Length: 103
Image (cartoon, rainbow, N blue to C red; front, side, top):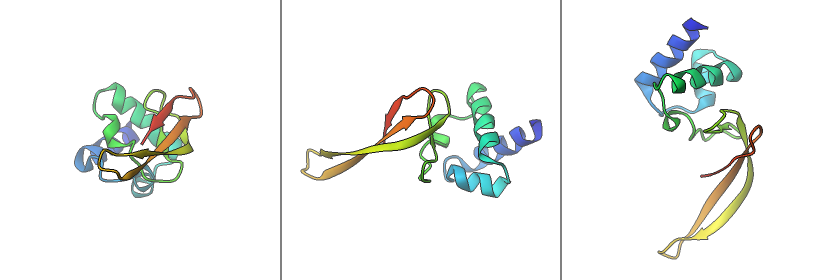
């Protein structure tokens, strides 16, 4: 696990948030569960922040900022901006702690 930790740490330090979680899995050959566990450790070690990996863009591949469990798209809310445009707000809910997050 230490080898994988160092590999993921190095990759994220070199690339920041330029890759989606599913891309990191493929590039590094790490399964999703292991990758999320390593990301938890990296966040606890103050090496990464949520900006590195929460804006994933992959279907059902967002993770909770509190417990790092998978989140599911629950709803899309429409909001009018001050300019009169319609903005789509995507609501995700954590499978474990049921926290809602908005994107």
